[in-house]
Image (cartoon, rainbow, N blue to C red; front, side):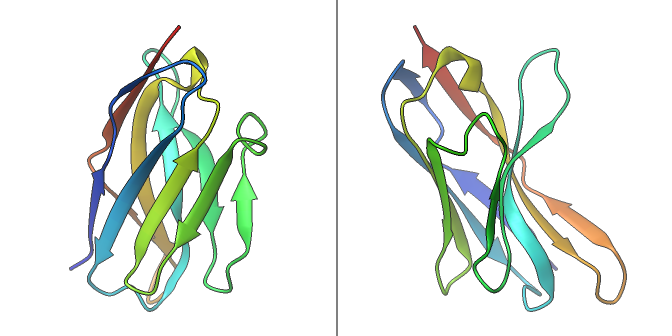
Length: 117
């Protein structure tokens, strides 16, 4: 059984940095993507950053020059966030995607990041 558990979310000031992490356990061998989505109040959930098994990374335009996604050998997926702005305030969700044996998405419960101006 796949389990995703986020940690590290908190309130920070505008311009500060923060790292959030996600520990993924279970059948992780066949994941095509692991990464982060976020959802702000009243808005749709949106992709933030994804990492593939070969290390290739994809970032959403609003964060590509400020956020860095990484994954260690123990399947801890981290998101380093720099120069945080109030518009980055959201619930951040860990995400994993596989197509083996069928297309399946896995989600964590989320960790709240709040950026005050």
